[in-house]
Image (tube, rainbow, N blue to C red; front, side, top):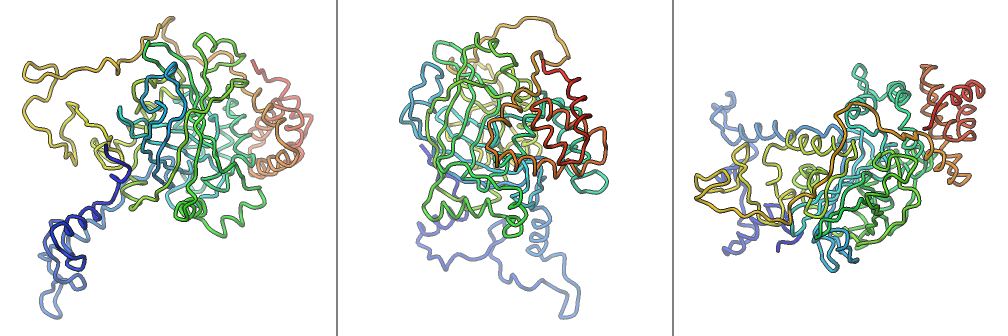
Length: 512
């Protein structure tokens, strides 16, 4: 089986080939992309000493053409990212839950992790207040599994139909090109389910001081299926062995001023110094019949599973900095639809939308054959009837490019068959029941220490004070007051609002 070293740059492979052929390192000369030797890389061909540059200088033209095409479309979200490679070691026997080989005790699986900010552009400061992406690609013996999550256990919205609007409101203004709290809170004032996520985002936990010192979550519920076809619902949690450390509000600006790239430099510095960061993978497990026991919808991604114990199933170690940023971190492509036998999607509405959108955006950015790139290529043999498309290098042979066919027998693996799920009801277009938009925001606030509460008020009020639409401001304050009266009162005072008016609006809200 190939190892994580299969991500090594092609230039290193070329150097190894030269050495195998008896060439010394100094014998490797500069070439064009077609392999022809370059005689002069400092001066263009011209028509005499004073004449214009010649179009026949193919090396010059190729350099400029390639330079003009170095950039690929930036990710709409998660544009600023940092990648690292390592391994996942399974430690617990959960064959009663899942038939996925990646969880077999003692199994070591290569991984590639991409950490990121969500709303920032490719060169933006890493210490801005923003959720942190925590995407893990497992190169398993059954194909690739992508666990695509963030550093917090929940999300802002529960239905993928609202995702483009959420991003538009939080990205820079379409007029000024600058992020605007008025736009963000105009959206959130009409999105009460975001109250819990906003509370976490503006806490110290929402501003990790290092990628090494933050947790990661799959956010959604997934299904695990065992060899007998039994189904359990699970949530995934990466727990940092380095502990969790956040940046307090008063320290954010100095941190950005000192180093815009602190998160990357900290992660890579630790790995280069032999201080390989580790995360333990935990799961929460529910039987299907348990979903209905909560007073909220257990498949709502704006909720945590309160009171459900966690179970450790393995440990991930990141131990290698990629050799080439573009070929690894920038071209790495993650999608929650990339699952393996034993792991399936739940009915979570937000997850259902992500199953399409994430794979589609990667295909747009990188092309139809993006999974053939070294960083995305599975370690197992790929045998599909997909063909052609830009940059295809599959090497497929023969004219049988369909299935079934009498000319070529292709067996189906029953292990890959999806579990059957009973359905009932009629098609509909309406919100879920048992929303409980404010309950867990209050529970989270009350669990904070006195200092953490003060930091939350400082951070959140600073942005709310930029909201000039009085109606939106009071609506937001009423959400936080509904979650917890002390929380809402302190925010109202910090934003110079009328507490009585806030309370009156909160009293009109339902949390059913």
